[in-house]
Length: 277
Image (cartoon, rainbow, N blue to C red; front, side, top):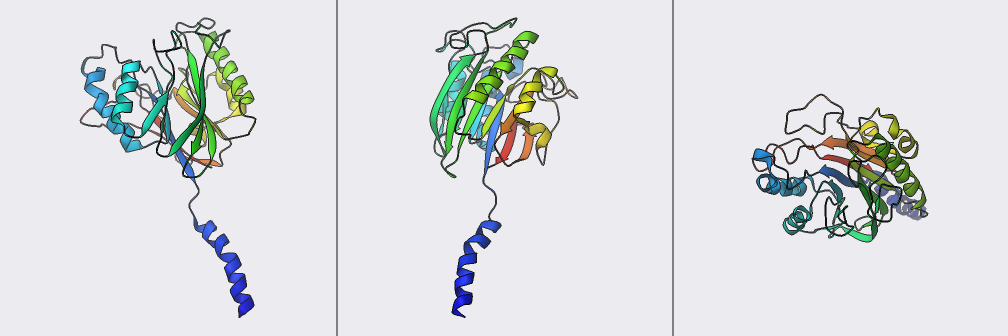
C-alpha cells in the first residue's frame, strides 16, 4: 500500500498537467484610421469611445495599430486602463505622422525592449523607401507575459498602399530583421495592414519564415478586413497576423460587431489571434 501511495503521488503532477488548458496569448491588429480624416459620421470624435469599448471587450495582451496619430494614441492610453504603448511618428521619428504603435497590457505583460525602423534603403533614419507613396515603419517589441513567464517578440507594420517595390522590399527587410533579431529563439508575431491579398507573390519569403494565422487557425475567418465603412464586402482580407515558435493557433477572427451604438470602429475590421505557447 505504501508503494502504491508513492506511485500515485509521483503521477499526480502529471495527471494535473494533462488536464490543464494550454497556455495561450491573444493579440490583435487594428488599422485605426487617421484621426484627421473627414469620414462624416465616422470621424474619430464619433467612434473613439467605440474603439475603447472594443479594446476592453477583446482584451488582447498586445495589439498593434496602424494609421494612428499621437492624439489617438493618447486617448486610447488614457481611457483603456492598464494599457501602455510605444512607437514613434514616421515623419520625424518622434511624434509627427502615423505611429506604428504597439500597445500592451502593463498589468499582465512587461515591455522588455522595443524599437522602430523604416522600410527603406536607410532603415535607421526617417526615410521614404523605393517607390512608396509614404514613409513606412515597423515597430518591434520584446514582451514578457507575466501570467506564464514566457517571452515573445511582437512586430507591427503597415506596407505601402501604392508602391509594389516598396511592399516587396519592405517585406524582404522585415524578413531579414525578424530572422536576425531573435538569437534566443523566442516565439514571434508579425501583424499589420499589408495592403495586399493573401495570394500576392510578395508574401512568398515571409510565408517561408512564419505561419499565417488566417490559414492555420483551428477556427478562422477569411472575410474582408478593409470594408470602407461597410461599402466593401467579398474581398480577401489585407490585415494579417503571422507567427512562429508557437505550438498552434486556436483562432483567427475579425471584430465586426458594433460598439457603443457605432457600427464600425474603423474602415478596417480589427483582427485577433489566440496562439498556444
